[in-house]
Length: 241
Ligand SMILES: [Zn+2]
Image 1: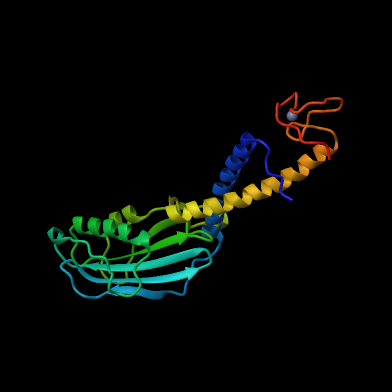
Image 2 (image 1 turned 90 degrees about the vertical axis):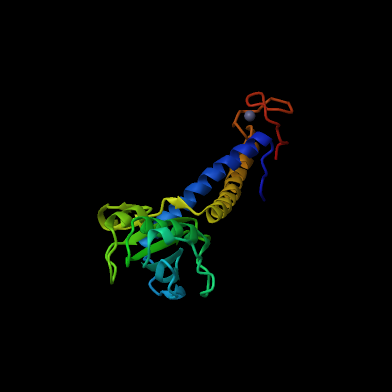
């Protein structure tokens, strides 16, 4: 049986502790997945843009879903003049990209065009990590494309996330950017589990205190005391078991 907390203050404190635990668990799982679980390798094509625009000659993305991670590998070839830049979402080419991709791709394309490079072919990888929802993301530029050239500066400004360089986990990249809907859902889920677990553990502890004649909240010795509230912490006393 769950013993629900008897006072509002106790409830609030337990909820706050559960929320803190929940956020730590989400970050812990994400960083663990990013460090120890290999990225998915089976890519499948989700959309490609081969129609020549004013400024994009080719745009192709592959997606792979693995344990706790979704990886999108994108390649764009720019062809045109900076003054012609516009934004076109690749709506008509199969599955649309994940919602977190479009905004980032737009800024990437803009930067490329501002850099004024014609015929540049750029590749980058977007990782969304988390379980059960994808909750943190990062982008990794690929500095050496198959064909064409990419400005090293462009790649550096594209990268998000940080690289861990410690012992066996050398070269692993860690996401530091939240994907808010997923992050909030994971947080609520883990916080709920932590709250229930906390109540279960405290129910056992408090039941034992009551049985031994102590206040269930502060463990004050209640022998010889006949009152409705604890003289030490002021919280309501439950009848002895
Ligand atoms: Zn007390």
